Image (cartoon, rainbow, N blue to C red; front, side, top):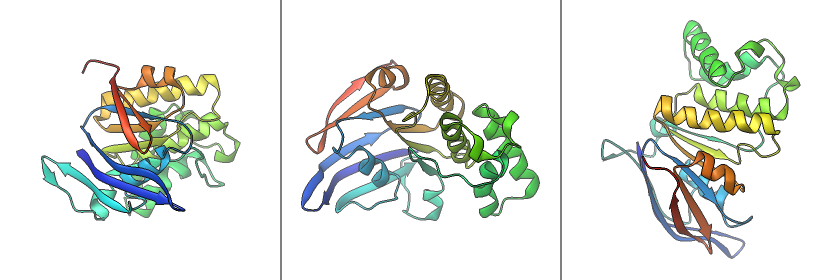
Length: 221
């Protein structure tokens, strides 16, 4: 899948957050969005993830150069993970499996898919543990596993290592890079850490004064 953002505008309380913002995201890449607090990074992610509507402009996903409809099928191809992951007072496994159950997947397939996702983020050994007892870093990894279980083609991560310890930060960075390599998904994330952006991203996009002002290539494809 590819994503084209065309002439996006967004205002809050008579303040322009995004102004005529345009960018095209290609498949199989990691994009890191940076900028000061309040410049609209999270808003931009929510708009791209079809969670929030722009005041003007278009968000268009393409599959094999064919524009996709903004419907439930397209929305099931993408996922957004927020900085604070909401979890249920039940096992790690049941948290990872919940969304699959809601979608009506068969019991055996749910077990296979959920365990595969937990293994990917290094939490399979904790599948029977109550999710509320996980550390903040482990909780974030559980959120990633829950998102991965849907096998999305576009993954949006809003500050995925915010308030996470050093060990889990490194694990999450490794998971993000492994995601691109093994799934071919396009990953768009935000961070305040320049060093992390360089370590993880293929391209760094800087939002400043309501627009993407620069695009820095960090790795050769």
